[in-house]
Image (tube, rainbow, N blue to C red; front, side, top):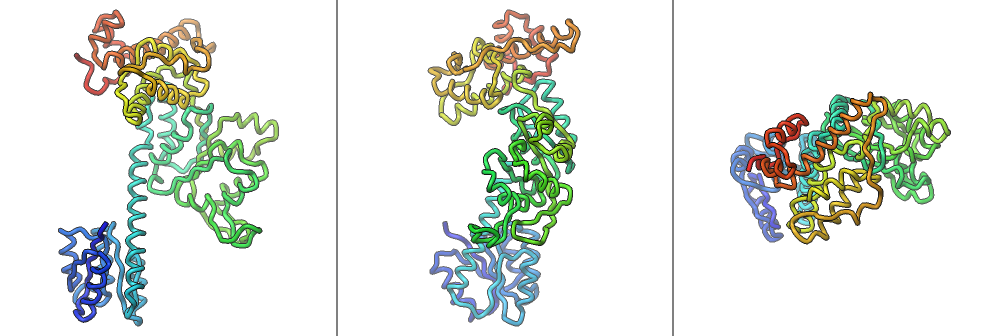
Length: 460
C-alpha cells in the first residue's frame, strides 16, 4: 500500500532532496509552503502523514499541529525542527504530534521515523475500530432475552452501568456471565477505556501474582525485563476477574488492599502506583459457602458483592430458548455457508423441554451441530446432540398452586408461539393455522407476552 505524505516546507533547497527521497521510497508526496495552505489542502485531500517544518511563514509548525489534531485527529504528524528549538518540538508532541526530527538529519533516520509514525497511527486506528465494534456489539440492549427474569437482570445492570460500583455476577457455567460483564462495561461511562478480562481459573497459581501486579526487572530469576501487570493495563477502565472463586487464597488479601487503596505495587518495587479501575467479578461457585469452608476470604467477599447479580440458568427461562436458538441458527448458517433458515416445531418443543445443563453455551453448540448436519433449509433433528434429560416443568413452590400453574403455562405458551411463528417464517395466519388457533387470539397472546414482530412483519 502506497502512503501519501504532505510536506509543509518553505525552504526550496531543503525541500527538493527531501521530496525525491520519499518518492524513491514509494511514497506519494504532496508539497505546500505554509500552514494555511496545508489546512486548505487537507479539506479535500486524504494523506497518511504530515511532515512539517517548525518554522513557517504565518502559522508555525506547532500551531499547525494543534489545528490538524483538532480538525483531523486521525492524521499522523511529524515535526522538523532545528537544534535550538527542540522545546517547540516537544510542545508539538504534547499537542499530538507522533514524533520530531532535528535538522540536519540523515535520510535513513527520516524514513525510519516516518514509517514508525505511520505504523503507530495505523495501530491506533485499528484499535479505535475494534473499540467501536465492541461498543456496538457488547451493549446490554443487544443481548437476546425476553423472559421476565432476564429483564430484571438487565434493569439491575442498567442501574449500575454508569457507576463505578463493584459488581458480582454469579450463576452456573455457560449462562453468559462474561458477556454480561463486557456489556456492562461497554454500556457505561468507561466504554472508551480499557476492558481487561482475567480468567482466574486459567492462570497457574505460581504466576498469578506477577500477572496481576506486574514486576520489575530482576525481581526474580526469570524477570529479564520490567512488565506492567493486568491491574495497570486496566487503569482508567474495567478489570473483569472471571471465576474469582479460583483465585489463590494467599493472593486474595493483596487484591483486597488494591481495591480499597486504589494503588498497586509491582513485584520487586517499593513504589505504589495509583490506579483507577472498576472491578467486575464473576463466579459459578457459591462464594458464601466458600467463605464458610475457609476457601474464600470473608472480607474480600463483602467487598466484591456490593451489587450481586444472579443470572438464572436457561432451564428457568425457557421463553428465551426460541429467540436464542434462531439467533444461533442464523449465525451458524452464515459461518458454514448453509441455507438452513428455520427450526421445526417438534425440534423447538424438544429444545424447550430439555434441561440444558450447559446453559446458553450448550444451546449454541447444539444448534451449530444441527446446522452442520441439516440436509434442507430446516433443522428437523437435535435429539442425538442432547446428552442430558428433558426438564420437567419448573415449579415455584413458594407460590400458591394457581399462580405457580399460571407461570408454567405462560412459559410454555410463550415458547410454543415463538417456535411456531419462526417455523412459519413470521407469517401470522400460517402460524395460527399451524397452532389451530384463531389468528386474532394468536396475535393477542403475542401482544400479551410482549413478543415483537420478526423482521419482515407478521402478516402474510
